Picture 1 (cartoon, rainbow, N blue to C red):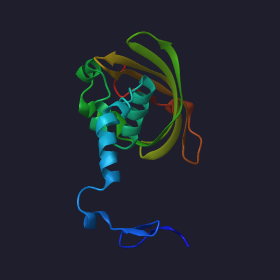
Picture 2 (tube, rainbow, N blue to C red):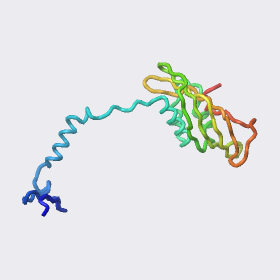
Picture 3 (cartoon, rainbow, N blue to C red):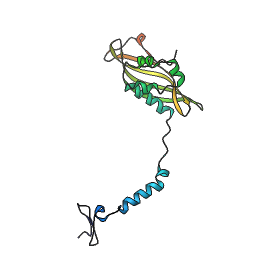
Picture 4 (cartoon, rainbow, N blue to C red):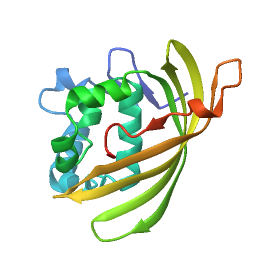
Length: 183
């Protein structure tokens, strides 16, 4: 015979004695009180600090937002100097034809205190002259520490291969992708 048993109505049988559910005993159950006390005493100390956003994370975030067509959020990843040079409408125009984007590789090529230079390789599906193309883009992305946040300073990618989906393309049709950040 099991001496410890929990019933469906919330009472507890322990060593032949029936302990009523918390709402029938009155007051706060001891376990709830203990949990509340623990959380209030050590909860703040046990909370991990917010994760710092790294330069690579901001680049991933930017390209993900472009692919998701969250242009305002993607634009906010740019540094103030780039936002001063590239309008939101110019950025939207440069990004609107991207249908799929996957970052294949990001390598840090140089790192200073407030500047990180990265080499990037990405696979894109984009519309060009009414056709859907698949392209591999390679180049550089520079990010700058602006205040406490990493911001994109330069995106300079060029297609290394590009083809209409299903057919090869003429190499002279290879496109540049810079979202207006290089002039």
